[in-house]
Length: 467
Ligand code: NAD
Image: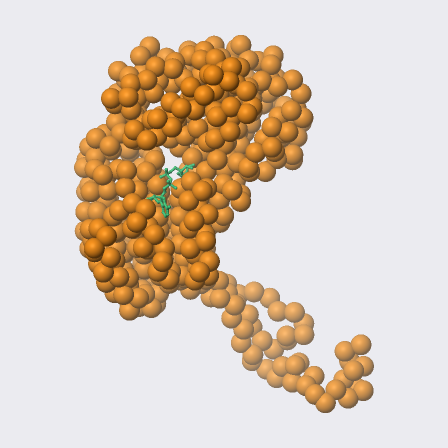
């Protein structure tokens, strides 16, 4: 079931909340087979709505059908399949050892759901980032209220129907709306809040969670660097960089945000980038069916402002730069001579503009990266094991790909998430299951306990034993 929200209808949210509150324990008691049944139904319903999702995302921001399949539907389905395959193992109590002083007892970890959960999602991957954590929450046995972004009206409309078709409101419900809706939800007491969005909003979510001491997963963003060192085989890897930078028109949290290129490779890198961009999107990306638009005027103007300010500060467009406000179009754009204190190097770009800076020695690279917040992702293009080791050992990041970009998010065996400003907590696969689970310590005494021999009065004999 799904509820529409406006300011006067906060009682609708409260009703949903109350219905989940009186039901979450029942959901928590469900066996693996029942949760698997729910996940299978979810999978079936998503597939039924495949065409509607494709059409909606085209209307929202020109997302090509192939990308809807590859980056929205497929990741959610693979998350579902992975959970179905492993859920029995994940839920199975885990026997652990006992220290010798606890002889005669047994200890195990009992995996219980956190309870009532809230998932708040952004607009850039509207389905994947709402439904992938939902899979983990269902697998762990929780009730969930979902709050998608307000910016993808067509997609939200379809997701609303998917949720209504697949679930009962007292278990999983979706509430539409923007900041006011999110604020109303954040005033309520949830056991766990899973938020994906900007670091600044993550702080608001964490502050709200602290009022109830709700646990949080914060999947945030920031500037993810791409290092191209003097040994990189540029022509071989260039499509991996161009694809990751311009898929979704750069509106991806793990997009290469800026390139740090060894000065000896700059010319080759720029030429390969330009050639590859043309291969992907043609001479004029505005006519390509495969290139997205910026989600709305607000973000279009934000990007336009970053570019204009950076050009005023001395930056130079070496490819692209065309814009069309009437359709929020920004051409794939490469910017050179970028001052380190310019907008394009200060803020997360989150769009199809790629600032390029050069370096002479490795120390400059780590100094630049470490002068900024810890990145969500860090990409290293190099054939030198020594250099790769140096870059990894001297930085930190939520995830790192070597000679590749962005695909780590697709491996359910890896934890996905950031570090501090780029995120708190991990998601996907077993990591997502654990995020929505309370690992309850269980201890059972079978035989007389050693403690019983050590109760007061502490005689000299007992003291000797302690010594
Ligand atoms: P956003 O933080 O503006 O919005 C995300 C969600 O928060 C939306 O549902 C929105 O309605 C809600 N929200 C906005 N303002 C709020 C407020 N004051 N109080 C409560 N809720 C509020 O982010 P966005 O613009 O939708 O997405 C872009 C950001 O998300 C980028 O920083 C990007 O890096 C990050 N992101 C991170 C990941 C990840 O997995 N780490 C994935 C995608 C996007």
